[in-house]
Amino acid sequence: MLGDAGMKVQTRKITNTNITVHQINSGESGPTIACTANLHGDECNGVVVINQLFDKVNTLCKGSLILYPSLNPYGLK
Image (cartoon, rainbow, N blue to C red; front, side, top):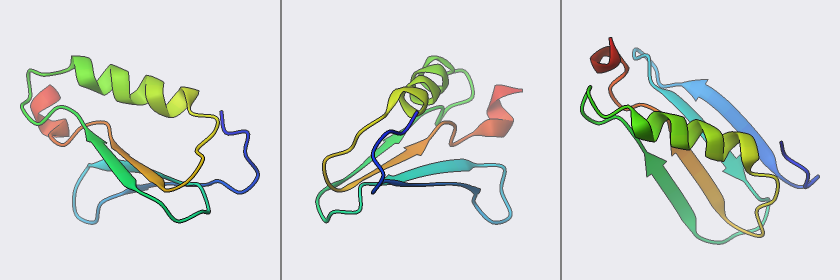
């Protein structure tokens, strides 16, 4: 849940893939942090962690947070 009015959230799929990207931008310049999960198909714990992080982020002081819940969605099957 996002509480800061200046924050912008974009969720999209990377073109020609099934990879979801959540990008949260604070509206202020600063560092960008990217978190990834599920590079290998049998690594599913990180998927849950990244989705929980996305659900719980409610403030971002500056910069951006980019979350990739699964870099290998086909490997989860």
